[in-house]
Length: 82
Length: 228
Image (cartoon, rainbow over all chains, first blue to last red; front, side, top):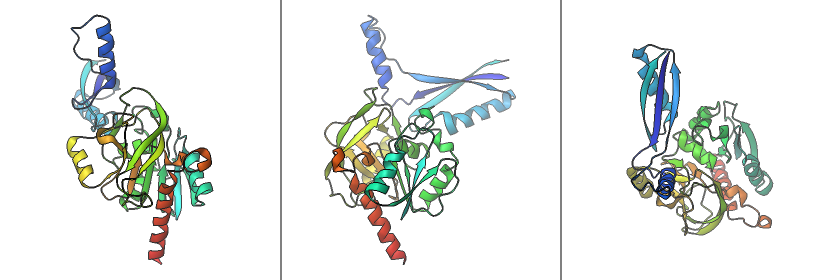
């Protein structure tokens, strides 16, 4: 079993209102050194496959379902082989 | 002209659409379950508002995998009329029948109120009974209604006259180019965030949405007569 974490975030060109609001809240905590926050989501996926095939599976499910390329982009990390 | 109103798990404006067509317009309309695989015998299909599949993952993202979806895509590709309001619009973008996407409102809030719209294009089968650049009022009720598309897509929408409705005055959700409703390039698929089906009776305060359904029915009648 291979554990993969897929991260999905807005593309740079897309306004992220949650990130903006959180940044403002952080500033009211006094952390004016925090310049920007971007909110995204991640999916923990367990794949029963070989290391060679896992990347193909992950790109297919990301591109066909998990990511809307009009708005979002993604990357993933192979966490560990269980 | 026979119209299908598709019902997904989580649709909640299906009855409004059905009654606008059946009770107010006296049209021939039937509910079609998401489980069905065919739209045979129908001349137009409508996707209602609501929260199909709980808005899981992204609004409209899971509805794309329903049994009925390949039939809707084929129907649209044949040039037949497809209309989606609110969640229906989100489903049409997720299914790739309309360009761009709908994201969370800039205010991060669910907005439910009546807004002013401009009918930018009245040369569509859905808007022919409106005046060009007429201002109308329709209710909106959504959390994910901020229209986004890349710059080149927006330019193409503008050039081709695919922007049918624009927010006039206040932009409630942060939609780019104030977009409230668009068609595909062919002009037979319309998606819009406002709810015309909630504005079809003067008794209920607003009938600005009525002409959308009347336009569609009038165009359907013309097509039927031409086919005879």
